[in-house]
Length: 420
Image (cartoon, rainbow, N blue to C red; front, side, top):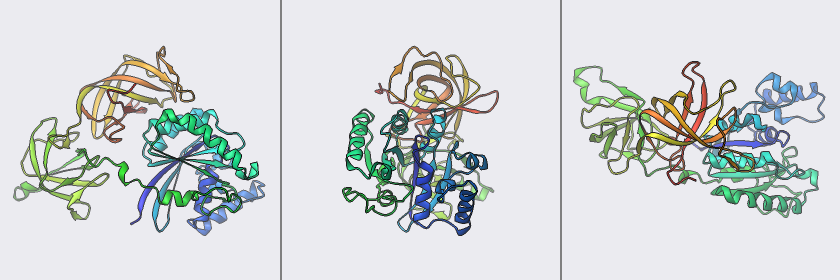
């Protein structure tokens, strides 16, 4: 089965995100005939002189009629080398939460920049968000090169400007590709109009992107989601503990520790969806059988005796506020979900609100409102088993839920003690 790559696309409103995804689907021959017929028919009804490939990612009829994209649209396609899930995230500042949602689970981000406009506030914001969310691979597609005469000078100038800004963001893998999403240049096939570009087209770049090393295969983390109890006394030794591996590699015979009890035991067997497996690694869903009958419940954590997460009730985190009807203010209580564990949490302070355009920190901020991102301190009602987000995105993230309405109101990423 081809390796899966999750990609989020972002850019200003008219930079061509949806067109780029449509072009990838079209040129990679990943469309059904009825999909293409539908897009061609809607394009004619709207009076377009060309087939608007952006319609392939505009999932709502209201969006199609207005010619805008206002939500996160997901599309799946595959090539012989790799399969892809693409998230088309909105560009407006008021939809910052949508990009956070789209990019939080991705391996890579594509940031589109209009070659005519250069870097904008939204371009900088999207780069900052990708860095905050720990996206290891960022591809900057300088789009609409056909409208600037395929100019290498324009491309080089924008690359230089973006690199100067991104130095502060410490993005591990940053690449630049000049494209025309509308015409297909350097999207799937190399462009004859830009012979000066010696890099690879976007799809080939994504196909060969190395992501295996991005996962944490050192720190064993298995949040227990379900206790699989034996059906009879004869099968008492088959009680298992199921969950999705959040880090490290598990094998039969490994010594492990269960938190919060601290009891140590040994893995006797690992079961996958189709039966026993020799080892388990992120993001496999498995059931682990243990040598000893110890107390393990949903929300507990299986780890290595000498390599445990931080056990703490105090969280220092970046929080993106997602609720339109309320604000995050110190003193408020929320339900907090971290991996498979629920707790109550009180906001004990706001250190600053981050301006995602300039990276300025407003240390006088007394609250966070819709789409704001800030550094927040919280105290949980019970100990949580956390890692810094930069080391493990699964055990380093959480959501906040309003206890009165049951709405998810915020998403947080745990910071290391050394974070500024």
